[in-house]
Image 1 (cartoon, rainbow, N blue to C red):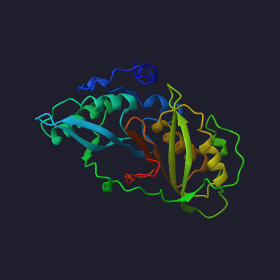
Image 2: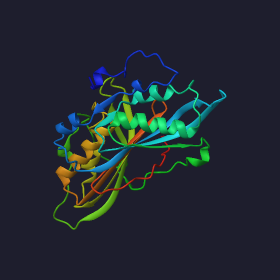
Image 3: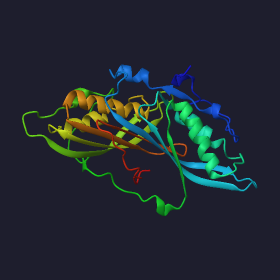
Image 4: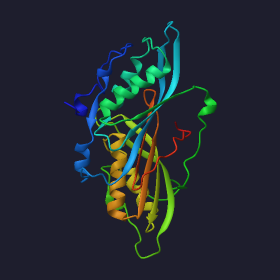
Length: 274
């Protein structure tokens, strides 16, 4: 069954070092989306950007090769891929001889597209640090507000408010206080979130309280971002909205979901925390 409880997450695991596409564990997106009231026709565009820092294989003469990998999984795909299974799959190439990096790329593209239920993109890059500069997320930082908070879950959309009596604004808001938990093990997932919108001004204090209310919530990264997007749309009615979360790395992978009311591709920036 494709449910989190049946995945390899949170269980003792033998780390294979040979290629095995069956290690990938897809989870249907539809179940959580129904919970949010999201129909088959999605109210958003977007993608999940994965960065892999622990990818290695052998060349035809047995010499290890390493690369950074970037994967884009469209939000329209039928399945997300459970992160530990993704890690186990990538680790399986460690002792596998590949004819070339292009052959490896084609293999990754085939297997991950089959698991996600949509064509993904794969890009391998060099490991030079100069290719990965760190940046701050653009936008007004919400975290310095002098407010009291005493609600840490479940997520509370009632905190979200917008002043419909004034002229629309366009602004980008950032918080580094996003924390949620793995729905199987309860392990924390730490992230930064960037919200860009055009519409009635959103109350900053209420938005920060709302984001902090994910702190004890159990949900995958992708599902949290979709929940934030849907709640903001329903409670604040922006004319345009995008939500982009940059989560910290676990097991050599970071996951960065992006959802937007308009077609767009965000920059795959690397924050200090990543």
